[in-house]
Image 1 (cartoon, helix red, strand yellow):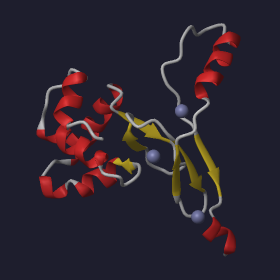
Image 2 (image 1 turned 180 degrees about the vertical axis):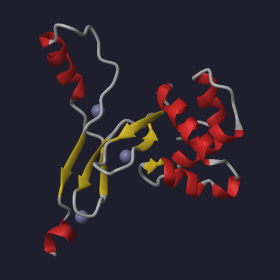
Image 3 (image 1 turned 90 degrees about the vertical axis):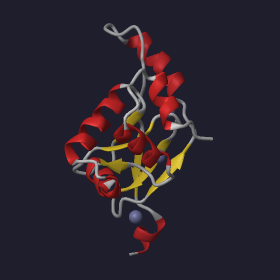
Length: 138
Ligand SMILES: [Zn+2]
Ligand SMILES: [Zn+2]
Ligand SMILES: [Zn+2]
């Protein structure tokens, strides 16, 4: 179930603009994490300029609507933050698999117990790397 972009924006107290709506729509499609360049290319038909795409991604990340995904590639990738999951990424071909299992809450408590500086954790990102079956055959 996906929330309508305008509802997501209103909940985050962001003004509903065509660019923001188009970007949330784009990320609501099941296409995996996208970089700023990917997003710009896919939105070309909507005539949204590159600067707007970059700025919008940054502001949506800041509001917690998008999250960064570390894929060990040159560019930053994003995906919707609302469907909490993690990835296994192939270091050879970049293939990516989602998984829902998350034990980070348990780990957060242990980290906080040992921390002298932090009193709370607001989020985490956790990606796993390996070699996929088709790359291992090569
Ligand atoms: Zn692979
Ligand atoms: Zn994902
Ligand atoms: Zn998690």
